[in-house]
Image (tube, rainbow, N blue to C red; front, top):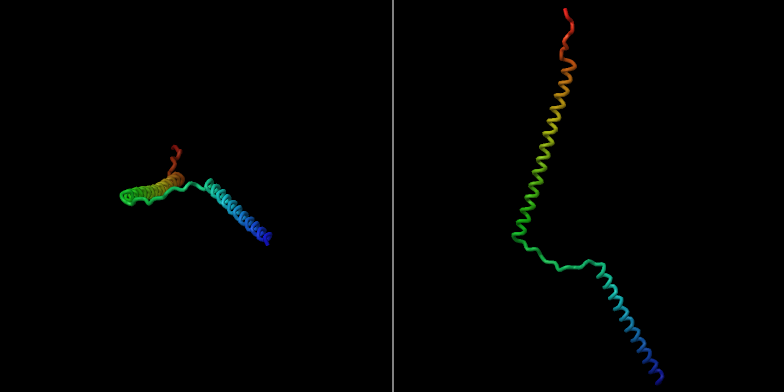
Length: 114
């Protein structure tokens, strides 16, 4: 029986040793994975909440001024487009009228001398 007890103790030691080796290998793999993720991930910084006070009011004021300027530019462009349209229309109609007058209504001086 002494032989069986020694054999069982050896088997238990082998199992314990295998388990320790597996745990060590697992830790090594976890460390490798952690190193790889640290290299690929961007660094993380502590976040903090922005103070809402005078800064937010000035921020909204700047945004409002920018929107107002943008709106005024849009209005000016629309008005300029309408003016250009009407001016082009007047020029086109006057040129057509002038050409029609020159072709059909203007009397040419006759060269009949008596």
